[in-house]
Length: 112
Image (cartoon, rainbow, N blue to C red; front, side, top):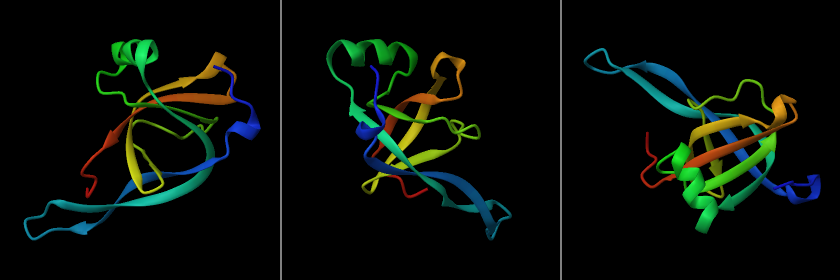
């Protein structure tokens, strides 16, 4: 699906884990920090599109399209309207460094 700039009207945050210290037993403690906010197109998956997406990411619930973000990896997470999504797959559309298509899974308990 082609998404035009005007359709990327939603804003989502890209977050990464930052180590904030160590716990009582030496384990690392971390928190999620927003590194950027970007326009995006977010679509819940259903029907045939859901079936195809789950062949790549078994738990995929949404497709997200954003302008190309070179540093984006599956270790990041997305936050949209207070909802948290883990990244399962990133596709650099036509390897053109213009648009990325992400298959993401909504995380129900996103405390850490």
